[in-house]
Length: 570
Ligand code: PPS
Figure 1 (cartoon, rainbow, N blue to C red):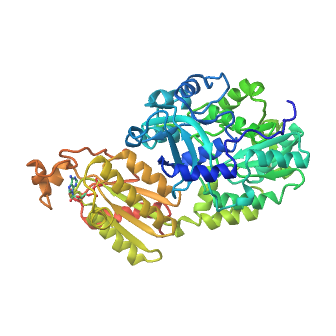
Figure 2 (figure 1 turned 30 degrees about the vertical axis):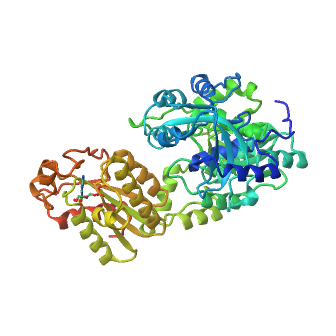
């Protein structure tokens, strides 16, 4: 592979003066408030990280990318980058019109000239791009349950970069990195992509990769959006900074990449490679199960472990960036060093040590020892600060079930029991209380119920983040909304879904509020279980039956569950 040409690559920004003028003019345009994922995409579109894209994909480019990873120009591009919007906004915009793109505080970041507007076939997109239509895949779930129904395409005029208040000195545009490599005389650079903290095995493998490629090393972690449930980027960056001291400063650099990952395995690896090429790198490390999304709903892997390497290898010549394949490093205790697992010839005579990601999480959750051969003390210290043992973390207990199933009564009893134990503040977000205080303007349409549950989820995630216990007790009839809330909360602590499984017949027989009678008479519309759906939770952490079981016992079952999960001490 030739050393990279480090000349600047095209950006989509206009000059400062033009930007000021455009900002003023854009004030009068229809404007779209970008989602967090769209902000990440826009940043890389504008700064050249997504070169050769000049904007959000047109319909023809989208079709080519979905079908065979090619833009209509024939260039290789594996990932659809779309501006997905809701139907209402789409109806207010005509093809040929300019729109303003704003961040979540309303700051105008760019203008887009809308050339295309269409309703995509999302099933096809999921199958072709992610190889599956299973919502256990985070990007498929996003596509079906979060992304807007309509896509807008068109070229972008960049006005300003999204503002970042964190780690500013560690963020670089492709051209800033290119300039740095030029200045340092780095002609061959191998990039290491990661969304996890680095431990000793990673250090060893990145050293080896740099040596193998005879290149300098760029540690290029993703700080945009990663897999739901990952360690937050603040903690990770502090960990990276601690590890960076272990690398020779003259050969290694670190830069943060504001990418929204899709966890698309093989296609994602090719995409990552193109992005690194744009950042001036000549080599890219691709591991086993690169950007893997975890298991599908049948408990199987979405992709083969080396599919990403195969697809990358197939396209690397055209991409102009070479793959360095990741070695699975293990610790050989007898020699007190890391070695590639497949190069150890005396496997049966030596002791090989390894700690998996799951085992590491267990040790952190239970406050157990993490040995020095595995990680660096400063990294472990940072991880322990952000992931204290479970018994000191916040968590959310989320009751769901029909009206009158007993959710509120059990939730109340649970609250009292937890308050008696002490140690953490407890907040009850009961359906009725929330509807009075947070959601008084909402009715019971699907849209309003979703909004109500997302609000409850938001408050519960804040409580969980800050080390408290949130107990929620709404009906929450939709599985996708419950899942979205779970994802919001699991970023900070445990989410325990409790299905209060009282049958609709029993709820109606009890009819404590007289609502079922009114629902049967048609005086209350859209009544859950009577004239509105309820998705029974498939895999709740706990299912409680209330018929012939008293409230105290139901609350006790939850307490036992919390104990078994290590969230409270027996
Ligand atoms: S949801 O679907 O989660 O937003 O519902 P939630 O906020 O928990 O509110 C449910 C309570 O509102 C009363 N109520 C209704 N429930 C269901 N469907 C309809 N149409 C409806 N209209 C009013 C009912 O008393 C619920 O209280 P609980 O505590 O569940 O019995």
